[in-house]
Amino acid sequence: MPYAHITGWGMAVPEKVLTNADLEKMVETSDAWIRERTGIRERRIAGPDEYPSVLGARAALKALEVARLHPKDVDLIICATSSPEHLFPATACLIQDAIGASKAGAFDLLAACSGFIYAVHMAAQAIRSGAIQNALVIGAETLSRITNWKDRNTCILFGDGAGAFVLQASDRPGGVLAAVMHSDGSGGNLLILPAGGSRLPASIETVTNGHHYIYMDGREVFRFATRVLAQSTLEVLEKAGLRLEDVRWIIPHQANYRIIEAAARALKLPMERFIINLDRYGNTSTASIPIATCEAVEKGLLKAGDKVVFNGFGAGLTWGALVAEWSGPLPSATRPIHVERYRPLARLRSWLRRSIRRLEGLIWGRKA
Ligand code: ACO
Image 1 (spheres, rainbow, N blue to C red):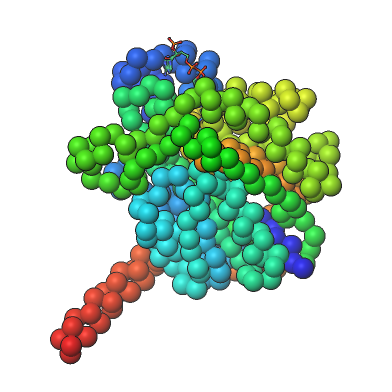
Image 2: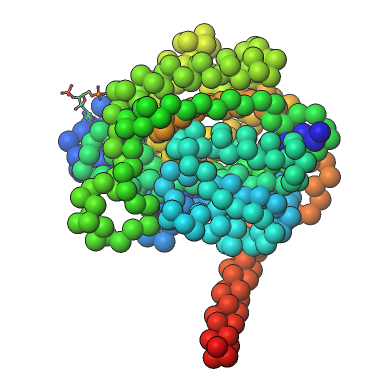
């Protein structure tokens, strides 16, 4: 049975920064309150042309570049997202087209902030079963478009961004070792987006009466999160036959510093064992774990051979954890791809395909 290795990683965040000081001008809040209650200092906000698929494609190409894997060799794309552009087409399909992954199947996975863990587990299982060789797993969000900027309970928390992993089959032991997934739909109303997607016209406000914004019972979600983060970590380690001492890093969903502190206390681990970057990005839902991972690799913290636990929770309610031995590119990976050169080519290919489809439509239309 092949092993599923994480061989590539990439992230993309919008340029625009929204600080706590900026939020002070928008709602009744303060930098001190936000930092003390959440640990967040600033977050990124998507520009007018930046959608989950746009950020997701950027992160995906970077991940493929690291893995030295050509987009046309990708078999499967799973995009975990809490803010898909539409219910259909899937954001994963838009990314498939943007990066020119011509033979890949693509679908979105909706498990809110736990989505990235669920998606990596699903891709790893597809590889372990022998069904596929290469998968792209993406977490991509423009939560700013489904955030009510007048609601101080939620608007201080969320940010935009995307992150991606490449998973590949190899006979070498390692990679994804075990995962656990849980859900409890009885808590569905605690964190809910009643209507819409993230690519809606401004006039939607009058139709949905604000139902296209995130609603959250912060206190209840907080209580739930502090309970499940530590629990799922211990559960996944038991499943993998590992102990906490074997693990070099914990990379949690970046929602709130105090939630991570509570998990650290429950696990009796120092905060230094956790990778945390929520101060600069806020809660980017499905993108938070891969973004934190990319930064950990970039800083030289996460190295090949390290055991790492990813854990998360979110709307649904959902929660889960995954333990992996960090791999890096496969030794057989030899074909460098250059993101900057590849992107215009992918756009040209997509434009050609659309034009051919239009032309065929005209020809067949006339014949009919
Ligand atoms: N600025 C100032 N005061 C505020 C703000 C704000 N931005 N927001 C709320 N308050 C006030 C409240 O009105 C309340 O005042 P009151 O006591 O007079 O009623 C007081 O501050 C305390 O409110 P709490 O809700 O008890 O504050 P808490 O310490 O719980 O922090 C927070 C709120 C940060 C939202 C916290 O509950 C939390 O992080 N919850 C988890 C949220 C989360 O992780 N969600 C994402 C899940 S992942 C996904 O799937 C998207």
